[in-house]
Length: 241
Image (cartoon, rainbow, N blue to C red; front, top):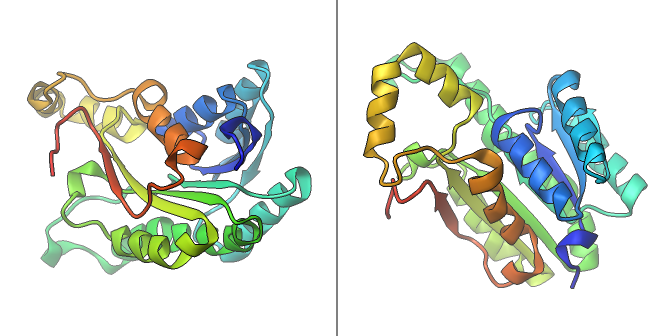
């Protein structure tokens, strides 16, 4: 079984926030990181910081909903490093929240394409490499605020059941972190933001690299080889299931 420092990981949405924190955290632990995102500049900056730390990796622009491009990313990772060991499906388009009766088709489609469909694209593209080596880690993401209605949870649990025979662990992480979206929300609604922070038992939101990413490192590493099909809430005891 590979040690974490021997692994190759694709991290989606790695240009900012939680995705960038995960990419840096994994790189510091010796993981080769492929950083993806829709815009080139942020992910190239992430890789530049990784290389400054002595790490290794490269950036590729990719919309997770673009199946052909996802396959190109996975193929490029395998051609350069031999395989893909870990996929972190962090990317998710932010759409306005609204009551069910007011939710637009376009916003729902955008959310599903970037989240569930995008995650499925990476899962299926990486599966042959993980199956062949009889080892792999897939880490999907959902919002901790939606813990009782997670669109991708069923897909994660089914994949964990079906792919466990190949040594592939599939889990879903629900983070409560100080993401760019959270910061933008705080600027727009400072009083509500302060209220939410105060409701958290730890009186703060999580730091992407310090609080959230180490949990991803555990899920990506050898110590989690029997941990699969689970929803992992990382939000400082704010949500207890």
